Length: 95
Image 1 (cartoon, rainbow, N blue to C red):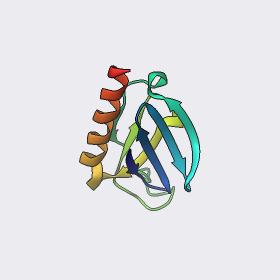
Image 2 (tube, one colour):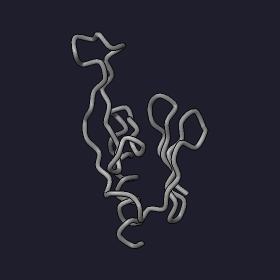
Image 3 (cartoon, helix red, strand yellow):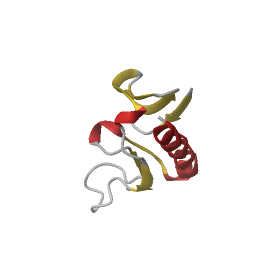
């Protein structure tokens, strides 16, 4: 089992061929990896529009093709997120 902790009490879990998105420790989504699109990680800072929407944060978005499969991680943990996405993408390809 692999877990990627994100911002705002969100996380992703890969457990064999099952994928979960957690929020506040509760499961928000569970799906077999066969139902996911290949994941991607890209920069998506928060509060970049004049700082009107809360504190500005440098972060990366981690997504597998939909809003329900998206979390954000601090930018300094982008490499960890990319490794997690690579492992999930391998599971998608193998399934």
